[in-house]
Length: 119
Image 1 (cartoon, one colour):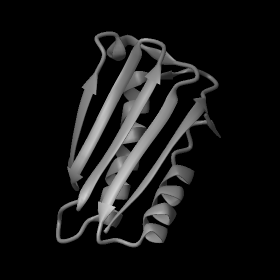
Image 2 (spheres, helix red, strand yellow; image 1 turned 180 degrees about the vertical axis):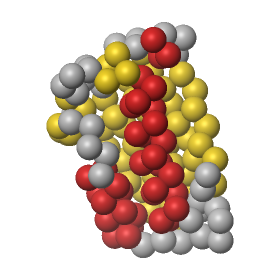
Image 3 (cartoon, helix red, strand yellow; image 1 turned 135 degrees about the horizontal axis):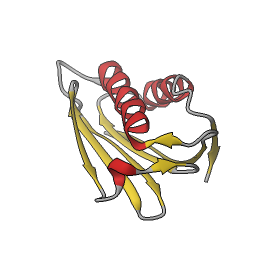
Image 4 (cartoon, one colour; image 1 turned 90 degrees about the vertical axis):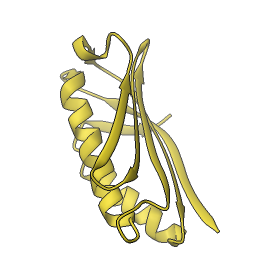
């Protein structure tokens, strides 16, 4: 049986944040979730995050702690983001859904990026 948690949030950044700093924060979020939800050094499923604002985006994927793959739009590196969407999809096998939800909530609370609101 698998458990999945997904949500789309809007991050209101004041002042705007560089794409590099936002990518670092998202990578840190993913790394912490992966550390907490791995079984014997693997994620029994996947962790995916998409950050997007207009035509600027970065997609992150993780199936093993310490290994995060990032794909970006051509304009990502030079972007300053004001109100990007933050969408995550976490599918995990063999870990109770309540633990997945609590882990995600804990690490979302530690992001400290500005106001998070449901989209």
